[in-house]
Length: 138
Image (tube, rainbow, N blue to C red):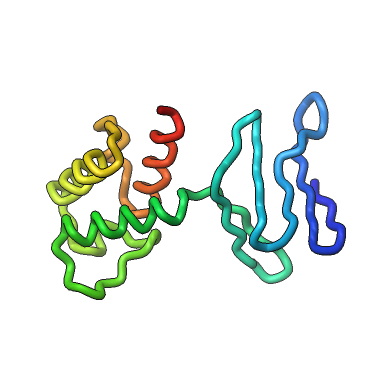
């Protein structure tokens, strides 16, 4: 459920017990989201015609660091385009490269990635999301 007032919007989710506030939008650049007492630090709004999509994503600085590590580990030429949507395989990474990327991320962020989680990472964004989640749980 959503209500709109001027440039503000308030979303609620329906639960079995009651309406639960989950998001407040003051401007397109100001978004906060809380679900079941958990706050999400970085949210993007993506216009979709008259609608928009809300995505909870890693902090931009985390994505940038992951991009830099991926470029370094894969020895990509200066100026190579690596974004959150970049797939490791599309950048030329094989399974060994992916293991080395994960090891580089563990070292840079001071985290430990479980093997089963490491095997599911296919994009820069997935890696950054996992990192922020691990750092939050520390």
